[in-house]
Image 1 (cartoon, rainbow, N blue to C red):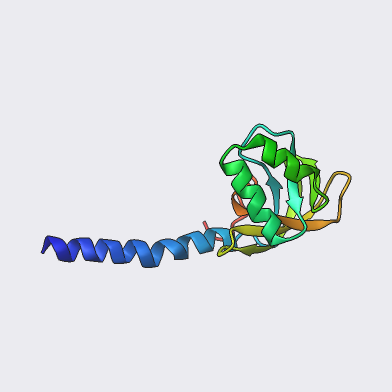
Image 2 (tube, rainbow, N blue to C red):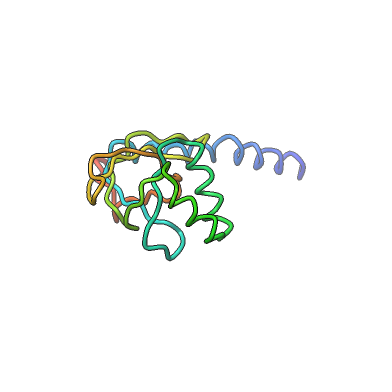
Length: 130
């Protein structure tokens, strides 16, 4: 009996949790948001491609500031202010990256890839259902 309850609970977690996460990220596509890095960096990187975006995410995750700064100095990254307003064009949950269009700053109108966890929504998304 206890094994059956555990099996049902694990099944619910593995099958329904990804749907909830997908719904959260699917909601941000086409919306305005801000790109905020988890660290205290003044500048963050918006990559031209998804591969470099993954490298940036790993450098920030392991708090390797020297490597992260070297990535920012590369020509494959746009350096923008932390907290820049963006429009989310596409969210790839499997890669953990979002394609964004910059709405302010020197590179306004340019697009690139950022780690999905750096995309922060406004305080509350507009809702049509109460």
